[in-house]
Length: 266
Ligand code: ADP
Ligand code: MG
Image (cartoon, rainbow, N blue to C red; front, side, top):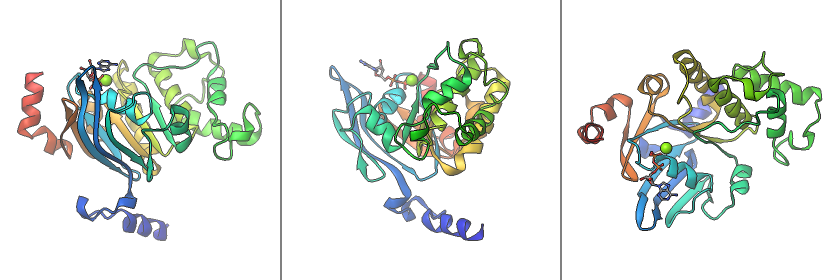
């Protein structure tokens, strides 16, 4: 335990951003631009995410947050700029290759298989050919079931394994989809407005869920709900007009005059 803690601290110095080595950053985004018919949805955006960091991104509607995740998961090709994930350039890879590399992305609306049970939804999400579970697809042996139960419990669906996804609440569907990503054991998890449409209690539970998985993963969460952001935030990045306005603690960004102007103007 002591050794693990020590090595973690050695790899990611807690002192200052400058002391962080390149190896500590799982994601390096360099001058990313996305133009739609001349309109720059992303405009020279640069940002880095450290290994096992949980980063919250906020920003007014139209700031380019969703477009940013679209580029990270290969759905949208940038006009220029680089996305380096663990030393590998992502912007030339196909979506399935990016998933294979260890990046999982949750879209704003849940996309589960409504006619299948929770258990079946988990089963079809087991990674194919990636990690030890790949070859076990659809085989309900003990190892697979143990893994499914761990994830189901993490996303509060352990008692709903045989329920059809279509009859779950909106919040439960969101959790199911997060679970379907977690079962692939991604190194980088991208979540676009995960608590939108959730009840206050479900929002609290989602914050607990993220805090539980955060220590072993890099996570980028886009979210508007400031109560939720307050529960999970360490470093917050504010996006505006396709680029980074500022990054810092929640208190720092909330007191930033440019951030206040942008939100008052919006
Ligand atoms: P956010 O998620 O921060 O609200 P988006 O990334 O969805 O912002 O959108 C950023 C801007 O890019 C918006 O002005 C939006 O209208 C525009 N946009 C997004 N996708 C497309 C597209 N496929 N074609 C044209 N414009 C787009
Ligand atoms: Mg969006």
